[in-house]
Image (cartoon, rainbow, N blue to C red; front, side, top):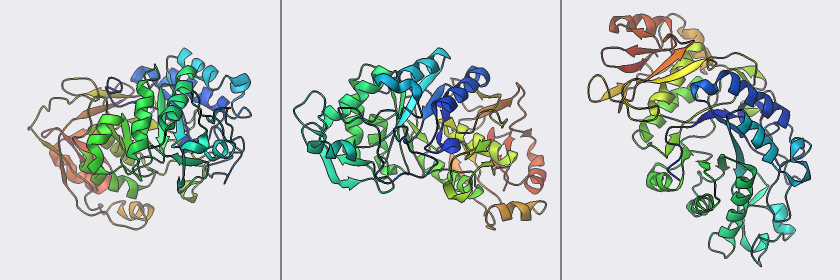
Length: 424
């Protein structure tokens, strides 16, 4: 498994904009946009997030005990009213083929376990004399979704069930699978079943574990059995989320490497929540200022997080035209040689400056940022916009005071130390 995802994957996921209700037309449209504007900069994965098998999904809220779509072996399949090309038992094959024709890769989200509907229907586990009822752990339920039971890893047929679903995904041409309700609480047994199924499915598939926070003390297990894992719960366009991300990235610093990367979550830029209601905000343009977006991108790149955007197509944001450029040796994701001191520092938020500070504090819920500083191994990354390195300002050290006063939540690049510094 670790032979793939040699650098942190970059792509688009439907959740931030469409919740659980994305349609095939919207996936195709966003894939076309990525192929035209972003693929040349390394963005390649197009991922359909949660509940593509629910014909009644309308937003980011889930239908309790919904009548989801499954096949004769108890495996979820796309809802044809939302994904018309899946008709006739074709599943995601036609959509994956279209994404591949654009030079991109195709991914899906799944929930850990076996569908309740398959358990009560006693659907057979493919290739065995068992049913889905025989492998279900009916006291192991997702706390926020009712569609699935956990799989009892100790029962005969458990591995065969996971083998059957990844056999199906490989036949569709899936390149990336995000497995939810598996990292927190941590289900090591089912993680290993999924890993084994991917190893035997005959196709390279990136395995991403969600939702976080994954436990830091499971880092060795995660590196062995997964390519990506979430370090946090859902990250949204809120300064408090970004402020806290510095501490989380510091906690996981040094763990990522070729084939296994801690994931700081999605980039909530641009047009969000067309059909999503997380935190009660609804349809909007990102709450992050441009300085905050640059700060976020700087941190994610230094940390070497996967980069997953979720905006709707057609609204320009900071990401369009961004190119991630390694500074020093190696491609993005490799440990670049630090051109300055052997170890650098990512410096977290300083107190907000007097000019503009009250407005920024109001947007951050009134909380004043406190001084914070955390050591990190330095892996500098440049950010370019339109081919010019203007997205991450390179300033003289003496300019820091001006930035801290005039551009709260922004970032500068300390040229002497070759490390980013975050303005409070």
